Length: 107
Image (tube, rainbow, N blue to C red; front, side):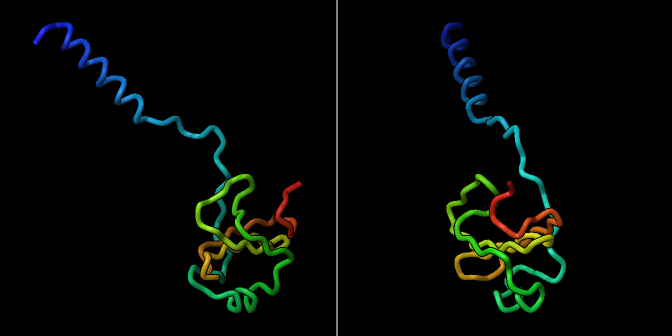
């Protein structure tokens, strides 16, 4: 094997390894604890029994400016947080957030 082929092979290997590495996002959304009394798999009726009726119900958006391939239903509870349901209306997760304004926008 010639030195030219060896150098070319090393260059290709270096480019391939750098192309597979991605730069982590600069802005990470905040992480929230789950809302006490709300567990994954619960029904909307279970959530209403625990938290009462939400101030707002939205479809499709979970975290502001982030869209997921799967459609989510998000219920917003003022000064409590958000409950995220999957497309079958079972609780996917919840986010305890005392600063929640009871609406989808944060402004």
